[in-house]
Image (cartoon, rainbow, N blue to C red; front, side, top):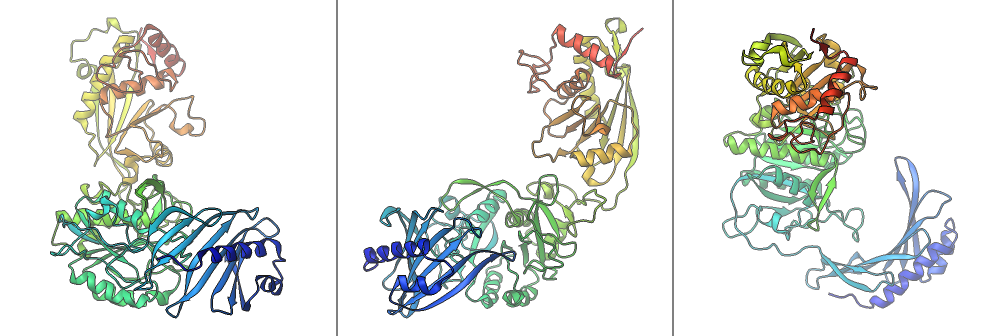
Length: 620
């Protein structure tokens, strides 16, 4: 419904903005006098990490309405202001309209809330222009749920700010009862419409968090169907009813990408979660940049056997900036920075933080449960933690269990062995007879290259695959007169992190080994932000990583391994990372089957620079 006297409210807010911009901000009496018709004023400072960044002032008017002013900005510098108008509706003071300025006190936008006449609940958020006139853009706040059918699958509960179930991608994945009603519930408003809106910071600019986390979970767990619960911020004791409802519906996985500093908020949850020990609760650690063992965040630190607490890492396993950690309270590091999710509006957007790390582990739990329907919290938690890798570092760990590099595929791998020492478990030699099928004349060769190949147990690299790749590479390199009299192969067993290429891991590995160069390392995958299927580190690009000079790192996913190996060897021999556009050339950026040719100039450069770098020797 439209509010009465909207024009008058807009005029009042414009006057309030003028008062905020032109009055002495330290003189509350002056501001109250200029606003007129006020009979009370309250002030509250806005602080972030102990630093005052602004103020909030509430002026009560004779008719029971309120004007709420806020100024935010560094002390002594231009501030941004907002003014809000609140009025009693059905005996409760409720927000009606707001205006927001820039640092020059010009109104930039406004918002107005429209209420239902029968329920007195806000149902629509209307956007206003710089003159506080409606733009025609509106946002629903509690719409009806679209009809639909239950597609089946693993039930996963998401306790958050709700979801935007008007988006088809969300609506189609909602768990529903036989009559089509959804299984979720809004424990904030106590209705059956858990729509994504968290007005805790501002009723005019509600946070939209649940849709983002839900979209990530649903994308990474196609087997899941969603049970959305809007968390009970007005009364956290309702968490008891929420968890019991989830248990009644047979839910075994509950995602909680939320938390607070107040232990009292979570006492009811702690009790009921312990009661329902078969439910696995996946909890975000928070994004305060602190050690929550020392400065707790709840429910992340609750010592319950059926909780997994997750924080966000960079792709290489380093703790992400701003992410919480704790050697005791936090279980896992999971890459959750700059992830693509679906926004409340249905657009793709990038997000970061432990909320999304938790959603990724909930998705992993859903995939595990789909394959093992009888599992419950104990089995799910054991299976998830068993896939965690302990980072290789001389520093104390940030979490209790370790790092899961790729939660989307982690359950496909065997549990990670713990405390494995680096050791060589096999060594072999491939001779020219193997590489050239026993009938290659040396007369066509001018230079000699001896390679060291290092590969790991628990990867798809094995002796047969390496022999095939090296034989193919030898055939390609012979075009330039390069001969391989032999290649030495070493199979290693070691800590799981060595199976992934990062510069930190590579340096530690190379520091422990003394194999002759050039050395080709065959690993599972790369954890670099800009990852490649293979990476060559020659003299020219090793200034900050000298210990890695004349090494190549090849991942399981490389296409055409023999061509790829020849390609990376040439990078070392030419001491260059350049690619070419010549048709069918080995040094094109892509390692397609037809790219197996060299130019005469490339061969000459390879031989000359390879000799200078002592990688090649002339054949007498």
